[in-house]
Image (cartoon, rainbow, N blue to C red; front, side):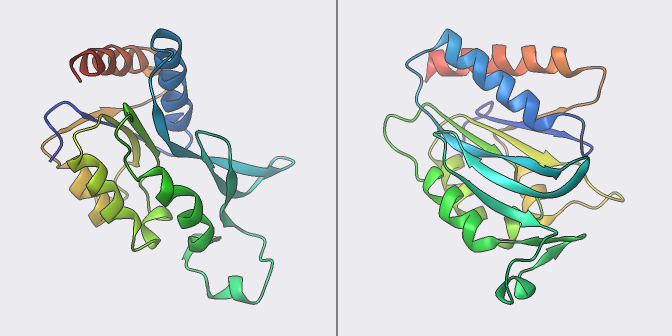
Length: 192
């Protein structure tokens, strides 16, 4: 299991800026530790005009692909699992995200944005996340806030992980939380 203080989880309501915060922390870490080997992925909205029509998964070294969409491109996509009005492209997600969770010896930090309902439709994803945690490499991840007081089982396991520190984001504390995570990660990385 990850040592205490090696797993940093950012949570908060949709649209509060979890991904932006994770990417800002990563930017600061890359500036202060240019040789830091980081792997992982983040998700971002896909928009058509002002309308959100889906999400894509983007690896930290550039490749990207669909995660979920309201636009269905094939008959096959009608069999994909749904979250709200989105259909989740599990195969695309796994092709991009799973290789990023294969820990390499030189890896100093793993970014996982996010561990949520869409991503957890992949049966291989959560076991890969747990393997990263067991590797003792620092992890910065985002998780959704419980809906109606109920957590997604995989998210609950992460939230209750003995190595996890949870940061709850809102619009008023973003800069403070960013500094807290950055400072704690720098400390962990120097000990690593």
